[in-house]
Length: 218
Image (cartoon, rainbow, N blue to C red; front, side, top):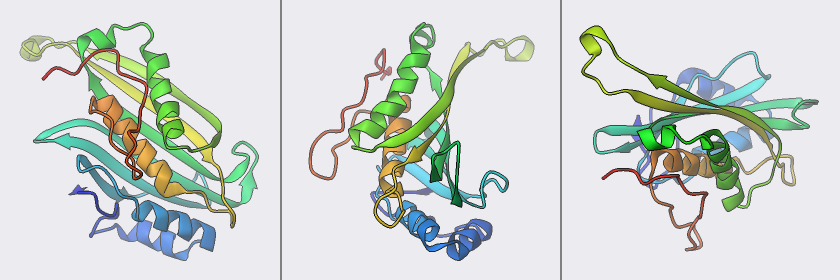
């Protein structure tokens, strides 16, 4: 992936399929995609366009991202923008954002019985901290554990968390949501689940998110 060092979120080698759909869709969709491409992200975020799903909506655009420090990937995920100009009853709007976020967890966090609720609060908190309104939110939080045997027995047990969610971003005048701000909030979630500290917003204030239930080991 191409690192986004406080720069625009589009990659230099954008995939032809995603490019074509984004450039030939209706004006509100093109404007929403342009806002995604223009978002300014934290330097730890590496992001690239990826082929979007083809059957969820007439128009779609997708990004994949990872939180990277040194040579270590701390969290990764995918964000998909869907658009149906005719509107969608379940969305209650013409746009929908769909996401998948994954990360490995420290053992003490994985054992927390309230972990699913905490992880969901990270998502809603990331959106709220950026002042973003959304409708019809839904999703799942899945906790999984791996134990290794035989030739892999020397590996310590590992735990993973996965957040799958979707929400309808509020559309502004002209019918275009502020997808750039939603992408920044989503990257806040990625960094939160990776254990990175909050970042200052554009106005100099600190974006405060619900806290992790244990410090990341140094």
